[in-house]
Length: 229
Image (cartoon, rainbow, N blue to C red):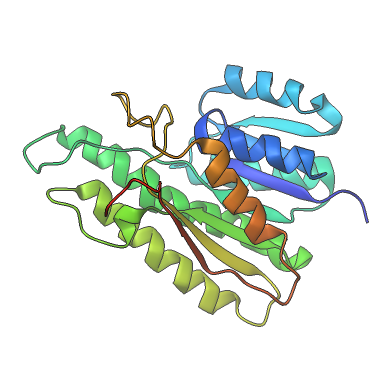
């Protein structure tokens, strides 16, 4: 079998880029998606160029772009084995903070965008009996004060279970990755030096996808040792 194919949204930095690098080390060919195509192209070049990595500019809130992303993966590499719906947007806590426009963009990215990735990649994943992963959060396991972001991640947790039930008996596995505090460009302000690194989360992703085909790791909740809640 040709090397398996791993698609990642939000791949230009942070968890997405770290997962791309670890997947490449494990023999995957990559389909990298983000709105920042310059950084994507640099990462694709780093990970093997045209024969091993495809960079696709994609706004995950646009159905036509998500559909084109999945089609590009199959057209270039002939298959799709792993799809990682990782793109996400954060917001300050407090229902009087942030603008309604920012809220709208966050909800569209974190909820609608994830749903579109599931919809776009599901046919190819069924064909390969592949693996669907979603980036959730500790915030999707417990409500945070004044956090609409937390509500979006609860939605991701629910989508992961809904997708798992729909895909039951197709051979497709579904995993929700739920990190605590991670030191990534996602945050505007510096985080604790004890925060998780993107590579820590990427290892959790690779653990899930490396299990035998009959093992479906549905959720991985990973916090820094120093994070109390």
